[in-house]
Length: 133
Image (cartoon, rainbow, N blue to C red; front, side):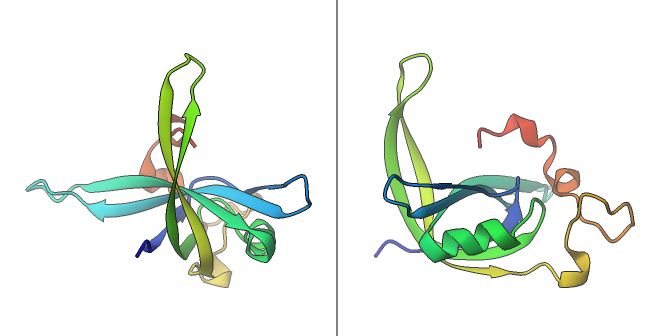
């Protein structure tokens, strides 16, 4: 059985595109924070590439924003590619079949909000530009 369930925060706004036959596909990164194994209990963050297809892709694109907390469920999918230096690499994506928004509506991030209720994922996760997604 190939099944994964994650709860985390979006690292950036979703990016939707369409295949040549018109099927919607949306991609985004998800930061999952966990307590580290060190004695100090420092938190560690794992980053996952999330992929949604069809109607779920459109829903993710329309309603999710950077910083929101979500639950996703799906399967792991390996893909091989060649990087810009010609090195063969393997990437692991989470292809989701279910998504639930966990951030309360009154705490949704917005680009115009400067109040203390807004959530900034960078506060918990460091510089997002350092991550490959």
